[in-house]
Image (cartoon, rainbow, N blue to C red; front, side):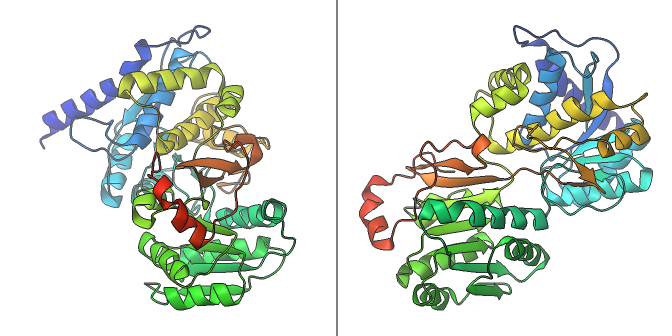
Length: 425
């Protein structure tokens, strides 16, 4: 692609990014005016002439438009300088261009771990704030910030949910837990966080390398050792293997929990059949509309209106996750910057935050120490009646009756004719 054509493409993408600003304004909102605050943004795109083929960036775009329709940041509109990237190398090149040619002092990303890695390495080298809106990654350097949980935090919050909520919900004071995870850094860190948060060690702790081949034998152990709760951190194929292995062994448990990836839910019903009672824990999921309305008010209303007008569908969970990251940045970080929007001033504003109560669309707060947010949000969700709803934390929950026990394999077989996969992801 020659430089002239590349310039035209980027110009068109920027126009697409700000188009919704003039379409919708909530009744009580006053549009922002004046010189825009220019922010870099790096997310994957699906096709050459559209930045709207990935729902992560759609959420960023719609939330930025909502702020501009409702007063912007201290009265000034924000302008996204969009640079698409779908790999580590592309992200590094995109970050270099945004910093050197566009002069941005903060970059929002990323939609992919590889994009995060490439973009934040350049931001760190250049002394520019990198704001990770979607991925649960480990912090690295003094210019990296993210509201999302690290692997250790995700594990610790999972253990906290199990210890605090399951005994009463399941009517069992002493839970017998099986912890099963991949023997790699992410899985090990998740497991450590879970283990440390449980009141007693797991009855079974099983780690594996590459593939979970012993699924049936592990299912027999679940049955013979009377396990109440299975906590699993694994890739799709391994998680599916254990499900079928436990079913074949008739290993009945009271709770089945998968931790760490919203992608695991996609096609889950089609892969496993009846998944009533399945619990997933990650950074996103269904959130109470009342909570979001109370938290973000006109901004959230306008965001949803813009998203649905632009894309003709409700925002996806991934779009909401990215939008929440943008909301926190524009609502609670940039307005507190003292003086010009230099990278140093933005970093100082981030380190000065002390939002211990839920402040974002996912229930996050913001309290930073070396880039780690001490108040990240997670969503504990359960399949109930052909849909996932959230059960914890209670402030964001959407399940009307709370947690339901995991049906026995015999009961699940009897329910199959009623299970159509409905609205499952």
